[in-house]
Amino acid sequence: MREELADFLRYCAVERRLAPLTCAAYERDVSACLGYLEGHGIADLSEVRPTHLRGFLAEDAKRRPAPSSQARATAALKSFFRFLVDDERLAEYHPETFAAALRHVVESERPHALLIPATAQGRDHGPRVAGELELGMTGDCVDLGIDRAGRLIQYKPAYGGNIISVIMGSTTPQLATVRPGMFAPVEPRDGVEAEVFSMDLEQASRLTLVEREHTPDTAAYELDSAALVLCVGKGVGGPEALPEIDAQAARLGAVVGGSRDVTDAGWLPKNRQIGLTGRAIAPRVLVEVGVRGAFEHMIGSVRAGVIVALNANERAPIFEHADVGLVGDWRETLPPLVDALEGKVS
Image 1 (cartoon, rainbow, N blue to C red):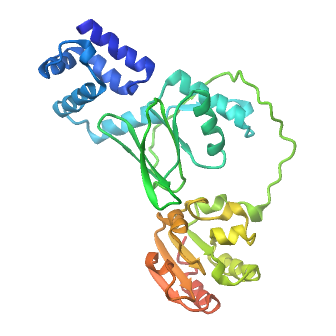
Image 2 (image 1 turned 90 degrees about the vertical axis):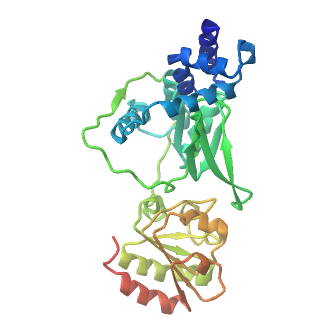
Image 3 (image 1 turned 30 degrees about the vertical axis):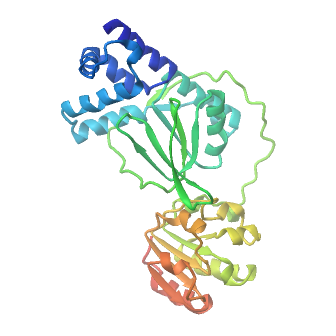
C-alpha cells in the first residue's frame, strides 16, 4: 500500500483535491502516514478519505517541535514575499495585462493562497484570474484565518452586512480579495530582498489608453492612509455645508469622506464613500459629522482608533459606536473640537 499511497498523494496535489502544502507534508513521511492509517483500521487505499489524511497531519503536528518565531517569520517571508513581476507593459493599468501577469505566476508557482487587495483594480483583474483558471474566489474579505488542515478561512459580510459569512474554498490555490484597512501594517524587516521574477507576457491587451484625467479634489486614495478623517452625513443639512467642513478639515490636515447617503446624493464623489459598499478606513481619529451610524456604514470604520460623533439627534445610532459624542448643531460643536485637535493628531 506504500507505493499506492504515495501515488495517491501526488494525485491529490495535481488534481487540487487537497492543499499542495498539505500533500507535500504527507508525501515527505509516507511511512508515518501509513502507520497512522493502519492504526485506524484502514488496510486498503479505497478506504482512505481526505479526512483521514488531515487527521494524520494534525496528529503529526503535535509530535513535531514548534518552530521558533524567527523560523516562522523566515518561512513566511519565503512563502509570501517572493515575486516582483517587472514588465514595461505593467506601467499603465490594463486589466487584461495585469490578469495575464498574475495568472502566469499562479500557474507556474501554484501558491497555497493568493490574497489580492479589494481595490478598484484588484476587484477588476482578480476575478479575471479566478475565472480563467476555474478557481473559486471570495471577494471583499474583512478577516482571514487558517484551519489546522491548512485551508484558508475567509470572513465576508453578507445579507447587507447583517451577518459575517465564513467561507472555505474547495479549489487550490485559494483566492480572496481583502478590503484595505482590515489588518494593521506589519513592521518592515531589514535585510530582506525580494526575488525579481522575470517573465514574458504573451497576452497583449486589447485595450488602449486614450486619455487620463486626474482631478486632485476627487482623488480618494488619501482616505486609505489618513491619520484623521472627517466623515460627512446627511445631518449636515446639504451640500452648501461642505465648504465650511472642508475648511475645518484643512486646519487639521484631515481627509473628508462621506456616508452612502451623501455620495448617492452627489454631494461627494462615490469614491469617497465610507462603509460596506465603499472604503474601509483605519484613521487614528474619525470624526463623524451628521452621520446617522447605520451598521452598513460602521463596517467601514471598525479599525478606527477613536470615533468622535457629532449629531443633533441624541438618539442617533452613531453614539452606540462612538468613543466621544457631542450632541448639538455641528456648526457649534465642530469648531471647538477642531481647536482642541489642531496640531495634536498626525
